[in-house]
Image (tube, rainbow, N blue to C red):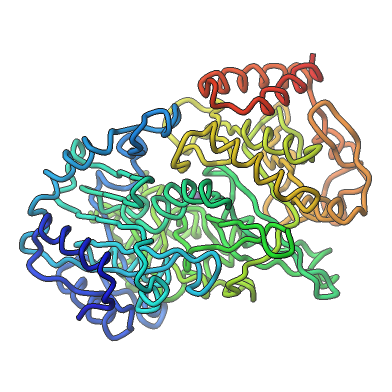
Length: 588
Ligand code: OXD
Ligand code: MN
C-alpha cells in the first residue's frame, strides 16, 4: 500500500524499481506493529540479536562487516555539473559519469530482496525548517535506524503534498565491495546514491548525506544554514534559558558537551543544562530577526567507547532502552553489551565486534573504536523541553573549537561576525593517538564541515558572511574554545567535562553585557576574575596561563591558514583574506 499519490514520488520509485529490480516493495509507516515484524525478521536471519529485555528493554545488537565500520571519505563524492562548484576540499565526480557508473552497479542489485520505502522528515513536519526525504533501501537495519534517527511515516508524505521537493535517496547493500563502494551526493538534483556499504554514516541517508551535504547546498540557495553543530540550553535559576550552538571536529567531546552535567556551584544555585541536539543544527533567521536553530534529527548516533557513568551519564541513560548497538561486545552471560571505557569489568564470556569469541586478557579490543549506539533523543534525561518545538530555539552564541595543545587559549571572543567567520574558517585540531597516523599533526577542519560541506568551501564562507550581514546587530556572538591545552609534560591544564560550563557562563555573561574583555592580537579574552573557579583545584595564575597568546605560535598558525586559503583560490571571500592579514599583522 502506497502512502502517497504524489506523482513525482511514484514516478521516481517506479524508475528506481526498474533499476534495482526488487522481489517486493514495502512502504514503511513507522508503526510499532510494522517495526516489530521487521525486528523479528532481522533476528530470524541473524542480522540483529535481541538483548536482555529486563536490563536493556527494546534493545538490539548488530554487527557490520569488519571492512565496513566507518564513513568512507575517500569514496564520498559531490557530483555537481561543474567541478569547481564542489571545490578543492571535496572529491568530485561528473553527475553523468556517476549515474552511469553507479547505475550499472545498481542494476538488479535488489533481485531476491525487498526494497523498503522510508518516507521521513528532517525537522518536525509543519515546521518552517522541515524538509522531506525518501530513502529506498534493502536493509532492515537501515529501516530500524532511520526510524530512530528521523521522523518516519505518513506525516512526511502529508508534509510533501503534491510537491516535487524531496530528497531522493537510494541505498543498496549489494556485496560490500570496497572498490565499488560509493556515497554520491547530487546537490543539484536533491539526490543521494549509496552502494556497497552497511555502515551508519554511509547509509542512514538522512544524517550526513542529507542533513549536512545536501542541506548545506539547499541552505546556501535558500538563505539558511545547515551546520555540524550541537545545540544546548542553559537555564538560570529564574527559569530563563539561553541557547548556544557549537562545532567541533571529531574526538573533541561534542556529545559530552551537548549533555553536560553542571558542576556543583551551578547545580546548587539552580542552573540546568538542556540538550537540543548533539550533531547537526539547522539555523534560520526568525521573524524577530534573530538566528533560530532546530536539531533536524530524532535520535543520537553516538560513539560507544569511552561513554560511561562519569564521562556522560546522560548518554548512557539514552541508550538504556529502544537502542540499536552496532559493533560493541556481546556479553553472553547476561545477554547485554559492553565496550572499552564503560567500566573496569570486561565480560569473561563474550563475543567481540567481529563476532568472534573474545578473551579480554589477550589485549585485543572487544568493541570497535567506532562502535555506536542509535538511541531515541527522547530517552535523554536532559533532553530540552524545546526539542519538539517546530520553531526551534533562539541562539545567543556560536562556539568553534578544536584540540590544540599550545596555540589556542581556553576561550576567546571574535571582534565581530566577519572575524568570527574567519575564526571558524581557520578551525583546526591536532590528531590524537585514537586515530592511525602521526599524533599532534594540525588538520584544518573549517567549521568542522570539511567532510560535510556539499559545495565549494569558498562559497560556503561567503554564505556565512552574507548571513551575518542579514542578521546585523542581532547576530549571535562567535567564540573559540580549546579544552585541550597542555603543560610542558603534556598534562591537560583545564579539567574539561562538566567544568566547561564555567566557560559557557563567561560566554553568556559577555552576551548579556555582564563582563568586560581584554583585547588581544587574536580577539577578546576574559579577565581572569570573570571565569568562576570555585571548587576547582586551580589558581588564578593557572587560568591566566590558559589564556596566554603566544605570538610566535600564532604566526606559524597564520602561515597554515594562508596555505589552506591558497587552495580556495578566487572563491575565497576577500573579507577573509583581510581578516588573515589583520591577524598576521597583530602577531608579527
Ligand atoms: C558523526 C561524525 O558520526 O561526525 O557524527 O562522524
Ligand atoms: Mn558528526
